[in-house]
Amino acid sequence: MAFYNPDPAMGQTLADLVRALELEGRPGLAQQLSITWLSYESSLVGQAADLGGAEFWSRPVQGASWAGDRPRYPASVVKAFYLVAAEAWLQADWLKESDELRRAMAAMIRDSSNDATSLVVDRLSGTTSGPELAPEAMAAWIGQRQLVNQWYGQLAWPEWLSSNVCQKTWGDGPFGRERDFYGAQLENRNRLSTDLTARLLQGIMASALVSPPACGRMRGLLERSLDRELRAADPENQVDGFLGAGLPQGARLWSKAGWMSQARHDAAYVEAPGHRPMLLVVFSEGEGCARDVQLLPELAARLTSTCRS
Image (cartoon, rainbow, N blue to C red; front, top):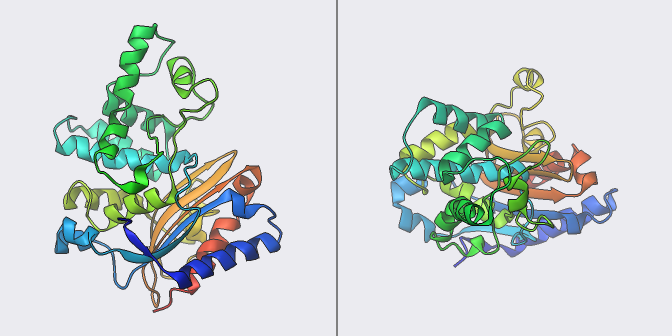
């Protein structure tokens, strides 16, 4: 069963918005976008801790999507999935707690550091990057790098179908064994849908993944300041050019953005005065979308305005 109930009115609002954005000067946008949009009656924070995890997931919320089940390259949004996996590994004693691991987890989310992500993926999988490997050694290495995929598969979420979270994130691209692992046509790149990403973020916000204390730590890393002076001091703030830039005054934001030459994505949970809480995940593909610093803020502004309480 899907974790949200499709709401016809929300679906129409979303479809009308995508078409309007196309007509306003973004031809072809409908094929480049995936959006999942959820609305809540009250704050999502900690709900599962109060209700119990099973009861929480048995209460689908209202939502809508535009190509929400389509797998796309997630860029740095995948780091939220590695964060959840790292907390799960630590709880299961598959990883040893250390200040350095915690420092890397924080940098991976707060700063979207690729170097920190590399360490986290190495720790999760027991692998390291390096030159090409002989076939037998490469097969063993690949088996280890599938551990995160296997863990998510065991959650039995329908939204997991066709997803892939086994690759590091890069500045200049993979080399050596990492390039071999991508496949000749990059067919083994990371893949996520906005529906799946929305479910993960909802689980974190509601304390429905790993444990309530772990979710509390993850929410602490995902929360973003909307203060203009702080944003101006940090060009990599993951707010400007993303969903957070379109939020009303006084809003609180928890998010993880992703950006590269062919993508601009964001996954956000928002609580704003006078509005119902909402969760919004947007993946936009193509060079034009990657350069478009107004698209995600505009989507957030228009959808937030429909969630007035």
